Length: 440
Image (tube, one colour):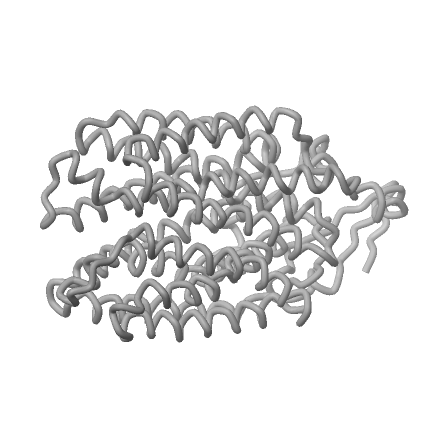
């Protein structure tokens, strides 16, 4: 239903009248409406270049997270932590990084909506790179904690900015393919980390991550801002990147929380099943390597990130694709924990594949929020999901001395998967949604 002004038309599409989108308003000038299908599209070569550069940032991001899981035990041992204390020390280090991601998620998300998507890609990778290079020279646990926190703040901007850019520059009928390319490149970072972490000394592994980030910073110098953000940049009266605006409407808050809860199983698997595999398999007489398990998981997730996006395009539904993949992940998580210990690493391959719905979820998150809040929401959600590793690992470590690691992982994972399935069922369907709208 159009409302006519002197030179502006406010369009309310069918989505904006649904329960979760009553506050979303699409602002399109008369002249812009006529040229809309062409003015916001990029040449193919520029589209591919921006997707690859955004995806490489995602790659560095995932590399760092997995490299910590791989080198956790040798780095703690080198700093004098005993084997008995390694679980508690590892949980605390991981939680410091996740806390940094909460802080960074707010910082970079708001900056992305206020100053532009490109500014986040510069600032986040610079902080992350310097923190990781310094991490190669730590001599005690307090220094390790502080640098993991700073690396978390830096990392927080990468995923949200990359997926926001991919969603905004890819034509809506092919959007899941664009975000799948970015996510696929990102998860390939886990493959590299699993391989490199098993070959290099832990200090050198951290140092290579920092240097790679600085190289990527140079490659980003020529990037342009997305057309959708450029379109609203001159509107000084428009509220952009506002936490007040994000939280002022109860339905918008529930939209955000549903996106977070839908992805929590991912960090249950990375934070517990992969990272603490040695503790889970204690007493099984099975020698395991976190690096090999992470490599198996990462290969699966890389394929799943791409194919979940393809499936969502084929069935023309984000929700159905996510539901299918989450159900598959639940089945294989159970098989990993209850199956024969010698198949633990092998079963992490299909488990990783079914957790590849992550790319579809982040795409859906970007599609659910208007241009003036899209970076804030799309950056905040992945980092709140990562921060869920804090309660997940605390619950797991608290239950383990009482019930044992396997039973504790089953209980923790069951709660994560239940929350995800309910959240997806209640989520808005956003397939091929027009992203040229604002939150008001």
